[in-house]
Length: 434
Image (cartoon, rainbow, N blue to C red; front, side):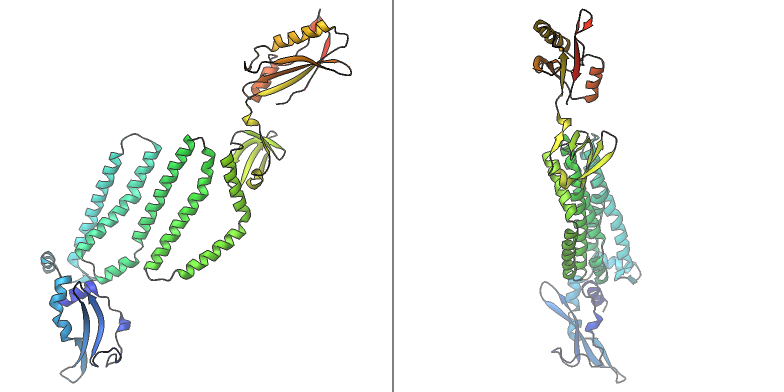
């Protein structure tokens, strides 16, 4: 009977609901009235029914025992599911006590297997990190963390499972492993960290490709995929332990539809963010004019774009609107253009007007911020009601507004008076745009 117990511990889980509470057993199972089946063990060659048989005890009371047919199958079952020579030796060295279907020697082997599996996993991951080289980069540090934590623990668990298979699982421990969330947790953890590693790689490529602003779109995508991975892992685990997840999936579908309807504006702004980052009408740090707001772009978020106005105030424009409106990107301007008008009196003779144009070009020639391909221009333009007009046009490079204002302040590229014999013969009016 010891051999039968060892075989049953490894192969058969008794469901008490299958055992009749009637003294005469089940009557509609197709067996003789004095026999009941409590389980079936599958082997490569055949199926073995575990039968109970009602017999009369010496005092006249009927009791249930394993049938002679089942007892005759004990050597066959023990050959397939019993102990080997090494296991038989260990079982005789330790007391015959069990916990969760395992004897003391099996628990000792499990502890040894647990330690050895960790040491092997530690060695393998250490070698992998060593083969990655010693160059200290952000990507290498991320990979090392991935290998050191989730991969190491997942490998440890898998190696430990391989060792347990050689020790021999009892039905009790096999059932515990079936509902054990450790393996789903480790696999989900590894998948999440692997996805984080992929996202980190994408972020580095976007930075090198000068698409750094598009990194903001990875945040919601990363969050959505992480949540999806966790939900899928939980659903697989619930299905594995026998729970029906179809109702839960239907509820998630209805909830997702309701969420999408409630968040239409958010989705519109998210799509607007995608269009802005794709078309690049502006970047963080550039000065733009949008919806009458003139300021510096501080952030292009998932919902809105924030501007710091020249007055110091902050304004926020929804990305849905930013994707539709005209945006004047002053920050993309290659230079600052200045248009000035010099007015001189009508008494000024033509030769003095020509001289004024020459003096103007001489003063502006080779001015600070001048591009040789865009030299300054000066010419007589029109007759004003009270003066003759000389138009002056020049460009300041680069489009640094404060540098341009400093150049004007120093008089290098600013306005001036035309003087004849020490007396002013003209007056000046100026307009400027940039």
